[in-house]
Image 1 (cartoon, rainbow, N blue to C red):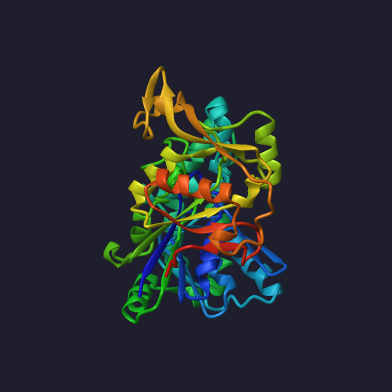
Image 2: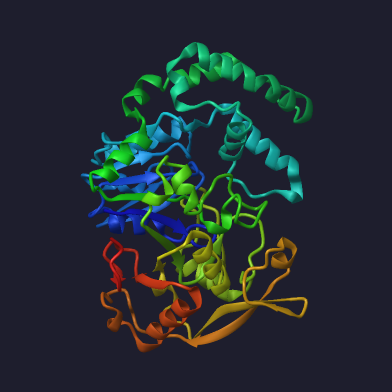
Length: 427
């Protein structure tokens, strides 16, 4: 049975949580393999809406084992806050597994994230200030703290002391902040150890055995392709591998075990934070899209930047990830438009680019070249077959499919869990 990777195609917020939830009834395991609580999933189950920030969305489906993989950085306060909130709403969270090798976000990571971003001024990246980047930086610098370290107080103290030796100099001498004591960090982390211990396991081994047993394992990516640390719009990116390759490194499962790569793409485009965004709208059309699509961050509440569909970005993501299927969300949001612009290429100083420019400066100065497609006025939220859509909506989807380099297998036509059109099965 397949290992299925779900990744964002654009700059995040495409609706990955809903796609994961759509698969969950036929899924045995759902794995979060990158990021932290800097991005959220909103999942609607019946009349209930759940906003998840750190937990895999599969935790909402009975029978599914949710896993936080080694590629995730974990804020323990957020983790237990989410677990308690779900438990209070009657969700069984007892099956959650946490990788012993996942890294921990500490108090000093959050502090450094906020003061560093303020220090950058106009050069800010647009981080959420939740300590994600500094935690990943410590991981790469080999001074990070892993989940397993919480169960050896001596080792934990040594690691905190080693990390703070440098960080306190930075906080005090550069940012004019107070030093952070080892004892306060140690006390905070140890307060979670007993609650965390039953969840911790060798998750890479568990997942390998699950795939051997024929289980369906879904790998749920946070953020998206254009925010990937290697392949995104650097430096305006996240700090982890948000592409399909990150599913292997972030979970400990070999890449040969990943059978299907599902890309999630909106019927238009959004972005949060700074960085280039060729189709961004600054007029009434942008306000209309933002309001109609309720484009505000699940985790931060920040208004999202909005723009029209960008076909070169989707082609790029299809190539980088090896996408086999696209899930297009929020087609219903475009209802009521007389015509719908689609970016088919870019103009950079008079030169046409049919693909995403490799040079960041070119991409920053790219002007979209649009083709225009007729819109529709009919309510499509009750459509469950492709033929139920107005002809112009069908034509729009088929045109985007041709431009995008792979098939559009599922179309989202509303917020409800069942508001989808399935053209090709994902399992």
